[in-house]
Image 1 (cartoon, rainbow, N blue to C red):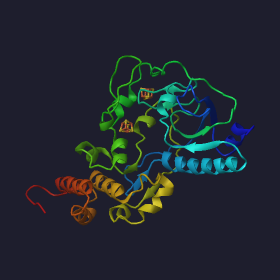
Image 2: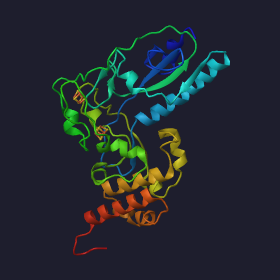
Image 3: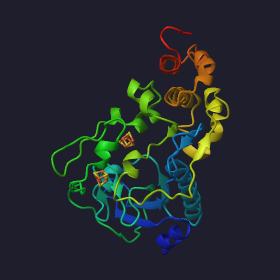
Length: 300
Ligand code: SF4
Ligand code: SF4
């Protein structure tokens, strides 16, 4: 494992940080963080399909690369494993080469916030490359408030200088991932996003502009409302998120938010589902679509 960083860089990671396990509060000798960047695509709110934020396909690809790498190292006798459970945010908040954004995201020099981190732990005494700061980074945004103003849910709040204030229940992404029926503001402002919301990153001056040549992966909304092939999405967004009911709930949100009147019959079927959150989401979607599509004197 002499050339761990070089080998991982040749696999697409832009930076590898080897940390002392004790400093990070883990039992193993080393915590290894592998950073992989991704390009963001311009948003297209008029696209009729459900849009997958580019973070998710890249994170899934990175997961598979590290899984393969670990198998190879283990076969050579090295004590190393992939980890998906460690809470990484407190570690990132103290990594000296990262900066802290008001939007709660960490920023890599020359990359910005558009990166994903894969994690390995090892019992091998691999040379440590970085030491954690004693305290978490303060917010390093100066006077900028662009993400506070742009966030569609108002999740990023004003706070004392240098501090963070984030209301996760007002973040679209939080609702996309939790499998419950979201509140009204999500139905109003989600647009065509299936998973991921780029707004607070897109407005941020610490990030490069989206690459105009990139396009995001999309899924036909009809496929989601029908609950078809949802397992096939696991490669792009991960099996935790590619669950049929969760995706159907999100399809109700998108259908309402993008005013897809043609999907009313599908939402009516989902409103009879055995799943309580799906029933609620379908009903709420129907209420929204009816309020948009049918004048009060001509109800359907
Ligand atoms: S991900 Fe979207 S909803 Fe969440 S804080 Fe950022 S802009 Fe707001
Ligand atoms: S948009 Fe401005 S306030 Fe928000 S994270 Fe970026 S620099 Fe900080």
